[in-house]
Image (cartoon, rainbow, N blue to C red; front, side, top):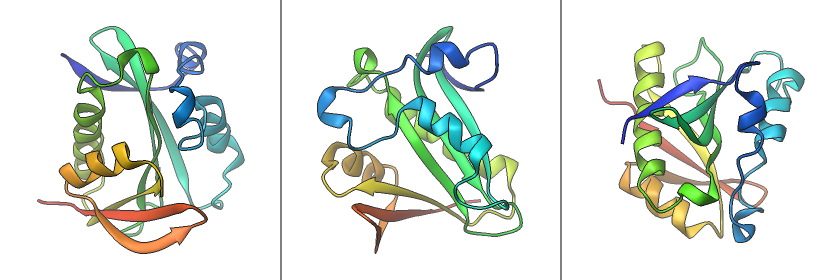
Length: 154
């Protein structure tokens, strides 16, 4: 596998919005179209920037992941909208893509000390992945999603 992240642009957005999860996962993650809308709408406020990425294995798009951040902070660096297309799930893409995203954030933002995400309380597969990668639940919730955090190692 040759996993890399590529920013979603006018060249690849139409392919990205076709990515889908399995029906039992629909309540766990927004569609790519909804995530892309957040880039423009900024539902978390004017200070939050969003960078949407397509996840590729060589030249094949296999998933989507988005980074949301407030640049002049140490702990407002979020991973959200993460999904692996249903035809590519259970092949190791999720873990590799997450490792790439963590590295990208750490390299791009030297001031970042903590990366956060939310996970639906019933999404046991995602929780297992996040635990393997070193994320820790905070015990705080946004609706049905718990906030988890990862301490950036330098």
